[in-house]
Figure (cartoon, one colour):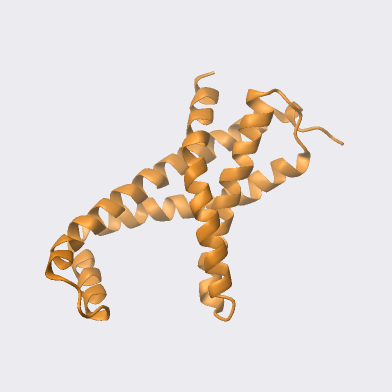
Length: 166
């Protein structure tokens, strides 16, 4: 019961993030058509957005409204969950890596500043705080996604009856 409630709450929290990821993924896909390396990141972003929306659909229709769902929804959730699991663990690992090695963050900041000329000094002074805040946002997202995916996969296993065989 607690896991189901937590799953529903996390699903509602993730919906706006999924909308942003879906939009970013579409724009990224359009801009990276000629670059295969950029297509991989577009694919990861889109899969995470698809996972959020399909798992929300399952939580809303299958769990909250007690309606039957198509078996294809279960397949969409499972496939995209594994890709999203990679994204969430990457967010957590990136946070830990940059916090354990502050020299990497300083190197990143210096490279970012050399690419953009004419940045106001106030913005340069705020850069470390901004990147630090962004790291904490990514950590929160990574943890929420990791927990959500874990619960999602266990609920799908225990509630096979929700998926109709039509």
